[in-house]
Image 1 (cartoon, rainbow, N blue to C red):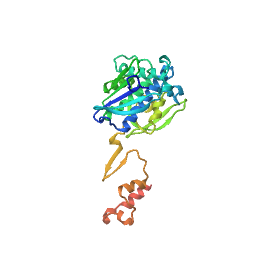
Image 2: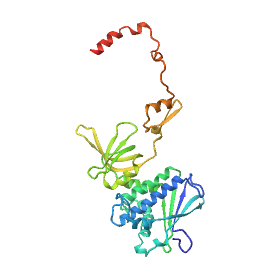
Image 3: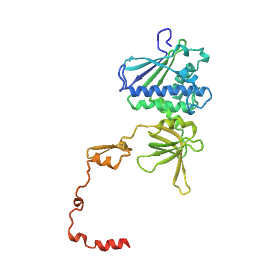
Image 4: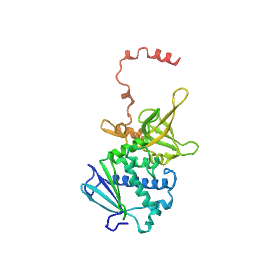
Length: 317
């Protein structure tokens, strides 16, 4: 609900070369809103001493208390500003308002996680960091800064998320580990059985890689199914020295690599990962059935066939 000065409950301001006064790409805004909402929900769960990446639907009291409505999208020259409101039914006594506390700690945490300390702020765990990291994908799409302001009637909170803070979040997630391996590919199989959670990553070159993962990143894995991902972990090997599986510590959705997605040949293109039929490949390349098999013979002189019968007989024996 707005404060006495008429300010929206929460404002999110976007800046960057791909943002215009009062305008930005819809897909980028939806991505930012989705990741920010997920961050707030995960903070609320962490405050209840529940792992924020717990699978399944969120408790109704959490989702209700964090629900926001988009009420305006205005110009903040040279930026675009989204204005969010809560409903009157959500407003509770400060000490009992789960939503208010979650949003406040989330915004305060943006500065804290950008500091040099390895201590996580209140309400933060690995799941919250992963979602903040995902929000940072906007910095590859022409957004260079996101400012938040929580306009509580008594104590407003401001926060900024930019590439430097995003890099610090990544560093916190990617703690140095011995024998750490990072690879990219498409996630085409996932098994969430408690007795053996695993996924299969298909790199653009080479054999698929089986990865095992823990419950605390199950939600991230589920969001990435059928997408291009970057995974990090420790490789486990067979006694022979051949790779066995990758023990996953992190997974992140990435943009499809251009060199793997599009191959241009003779004026036609296809998706690297498309499973096309032989007929479709032929159609795209303009290949038609052979009407006269004689054209396949080529031009040969009689001497070109000398010794062929003998060679064929030796191959058969």
